[in-house]
Image (cartoon, rainbow, N blue to C red; front, side, top):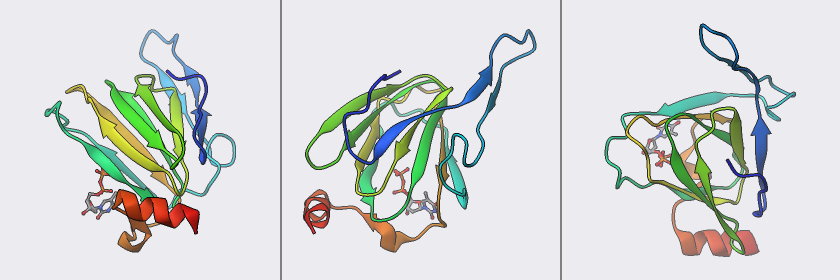
Length: 141
Ligand code: TYD
């Protein structure tokens, strides 16, 4: 797992965990402690059997999200328009904050990969920027 985030509008979210239980681990996040926004939506991504899949490829105008890889691994690429950083997501105890105005791409999924995303708002297609050049224009506004 990454130690330092070099792009804007991101950060590392560390969860509380107990991983020394003989009967399994317990991992906890709480709003305003580890999660800096009220969660209005969550979604998860599973069934990632196609290693060549690419997901994401968009930025958000206002939405705040935190992304966790709760099983398996994948590569998260973050791009704030000036800096780009690749993060191997392979530790379920750490999430990455996906703030607004941050282009992100997800690749290299293991077949057992399960991704959990917490979001600060309901789904709104109007909050998406799905074209990279439009993203570059939007962040310069
Ligand atoms: P998208 O966010 O582009 O997927 P990803 O970033 O995981 O590749 O969403 C894919 C499709 O699902 C798109 O048509 C919008 C729809 N969708 C919803 O209807 N509600 C949601 O909460 C999300 C995340 C997506």
